[in-house]
Image (cartoon, rainbow, N blue to C red; front, side, top):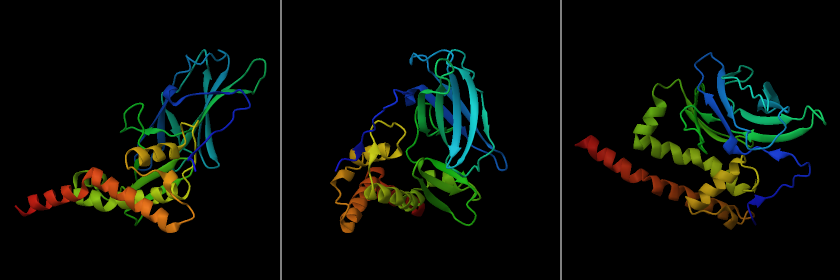
Length: 259
C-alpha cells in the first residue's frame, strides 16, 4: 500500500510553492506574545498585480488575518504580533491571493499549512522535529503531535539550561530522544498516508526520513498486525540510535569522567 495520495485541483487555483515563502517565528520571552517575520516572493507566478495578498495565522479554530497589500505592491509587515495565541501551541500559516477584479473574492493562488521555522534554523530549512521551550508545569518534557502541524519536542523552560544540557550530555540525549521519537513512529506505523502534492504535509518529510535515513519503509508494514508494527518501530529506533552513536558517546563520556 503506497503512502502517497494525490489530490486533484478542480478550481484552477495556483499553488504557492514553499520556496517562495519564509516565515520565521521568534522565541517569546515569558509574558510576551509570539512574533513572526514573513517573507514572500510572488514575482515568478504571473498573478494579477491588483490581486490582494493575505497572510493568516491559525491554530485549530483560532486565527488572525494580516492584509499585505497586492501582488504588484506587496506590503509585508516587518513583524506580525501573534497575541491571540498561547505561545505553547503550534501555529500554522496560510497565504491567500484573492482576485479584486473580474471575480472579486475568488482565490487565485494559495499555500496551506505553512510551518514556520524557528529563529534558530537557517532560512529555507525547517526541522522535521522542532524543539520548543515552554512552561510545562511539573512535566520535564513531552512530544506533542498535531495532525496538521506535525510533531514538536517540548522542553520545560523552568529547568535552567535544559536544552543545552541535552545537546552537551550524551547520556541525556540517549535517554530522551529515542523516547521522544517513539510517538511519531507509532503514528507513522498506524497511518503513513500523505498528499504527495502537498509540500506542507509533515508526514511526507517523516516518511522520507524513515525510508532514506532509517531504512524503514512504512509501506512494508502490515497494519493489521500489531506485532509487525512494533517490530518496525523498534527497528527504526535502533537505526536512529546507531546512526547517532548514543552508546559509544555515553561510554566515551563515562570513561572521561572516571579518569
